[in-house]
Every structure is written in structure tokens, then in C-alpha cells.
Length: 252
Image (cartoon, rainbow, N blue to C red; front, side):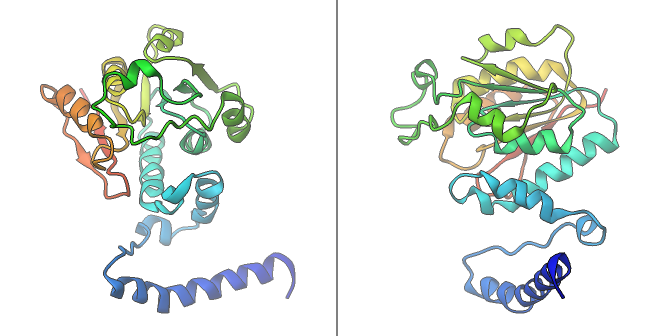
């Protein structure tokens, strides 16, 4: 057997070995959570391997193994499509473009707005943080050109380089959003993004809030809890590495 057929057979053997030995070993260690794929993925022809390859291609540090977060995006992007929730996509905090590429690939017919300095944290936002809240991270090892190369050329992708919320002026009046991913790490841009996007969310639309429960960026939970204190929506935590939370806009 040669070529793709042999590679496929090898993958099946490896998966079998992992299921029989690796999962039990990891579980017995007590240090790792072993998670099954959702049944609709495991029992259909859905090509999870394709999405995992995309997820790890440029994912920094140990986030590449955060497959619970990947499945969360797959699940909710599927709902946006299946339920016909109208509107564009947006991301604040693009960094090197991993989730931006994933969102564009999952919903390629939607306009995707990308908001970032593409040069790291803005000093105006850091001024609102508690001392040392950034932990020395700058996220400046990126550029708009690098991100767009990673995503690939598309008229649907609208990068807005600069300081948010000033860059939100590029969004036309009447624009609605079906899914918004906030990953700004800092309190001030997160609070500004909630104020901007919330009234523009389509009924049933998803706001995905990274780092809500991680503890590494305390300003995120402060901004989110404060904003939704008087709103009808609830905050739902996702058991991924960095404590993502989801808020779904009330359907009226």
C-alpha cells in the first residue's frame, strides 16, 4: 500500500493505540483531562483533522493543544449557520491571526472585521490596568501583513488597524453581527468593545469572551461582569485552557 491509503491506515492504527493506551495513561495521571469529541463529529464524516491542522498551524505556545476551544468555535459557528443568524463576524485582538483564519474558514461568506493595532498593546490601554497586569506580554511579534498572509486574500476580510474604538468608525451604520470574538486581554478595550458590539448583535448572536476565567487578565472579568450586570443575558463559562465565556444575545 502506498500514498494516501497507507497514510490513512497509519493514522487509524495510531488513533487506535491512543484510545487503548494513551487515554488511559493520561487519565490515570490525574493531571490531564481527556475529552471525547462531540458525538455529531465522531459519528459523521465531519473532517475534524482538517480543522485541527488549521488550528495548530500558527497557534502560539501551548494554545495549540487547547482543543476544547477549537470545538467551541466549531459548535457555535455551526449554530450561526444552521439557525441562519444574520450578520457579520468580528474579532478584537487578532494577534497572529489564528482564530481570525478559523472564523473566516468556518463562515467564508460572512464579512469578517478585524480590530487590532497589529503592533502589540497600546499604551493608552495599559494605563488603565493594575500594575503589572500584562505580565510583561506585549504581543507585538506580529503585523497586519503577516496576519493577512496567514488568513489568505479575501474581499470578505476587513482589517482595521489602530486603536479601538476609534477604528470602529469604519463599520457602516446598520451593520449587525452574528458572532464577535473579544480577545483584547485588557479591561479598557474589552469594555469599549462590549459597548460597541452589544447593541449591534443580531438576536441569537454569540459574543465569545476569551480569558474571562483565566485569572491571568483580571480586567476581562471586571469589564464583562460590570457590563452585563443589568442585561438579560447570562455568562456561560467554557472549560478550555483560558476560561473563555460565551454570551448569547437574547432573541426578541
